[in-house]
Image (cartoon, rainbow, N blue to C red; front, top):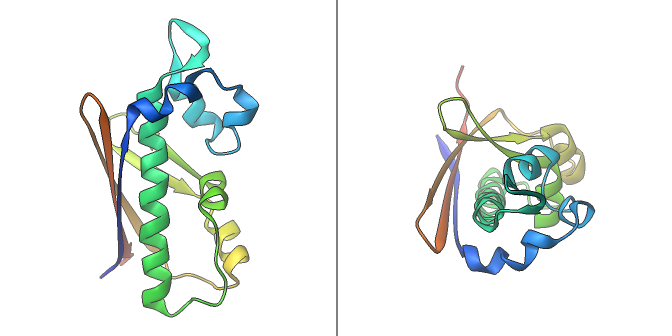
Amino acid sequence: MILGVGTDIVGSNRFAAMSTFSYDRLRTFFSEAELMAAQDPKNSKHFLPEKLATRFAAKEALFKALSATLVRLGHTQKTFSLRFLAQISSVQITIWGVPEFHVDCAALEQKIGVKLPSLHIHLSLSHEREHVLAFVVCELYKS
């Protein structure tokens, strides 16, 4: 059963200025693995704007999908911020090139004060020259 859906679209050019931010500054929103994947191969002190944009859009879409999921489940007493979610989640690309989320569910449950059911989080990413699109579906996991 689908519990929540989220989508986000961003312009990659918005992240051009971030490409020269310090690692520590970027670390407030992106995981170590995400920053490693976003490093410019020509200059390890810079990050590729399109890679940062992709991961930002994914986290924004996840925020929307999880928020909708919590509303649908009736868990609206405590909230969380996008920044908090960004710090406990990471977009990873599998060997097949398929994006997936790694989310620290225990940290999320502690923040909202509720034990969540097992969720499967589907992530789809798309991009063209100037825009990145992320689409997330939160589904009740059936074993």
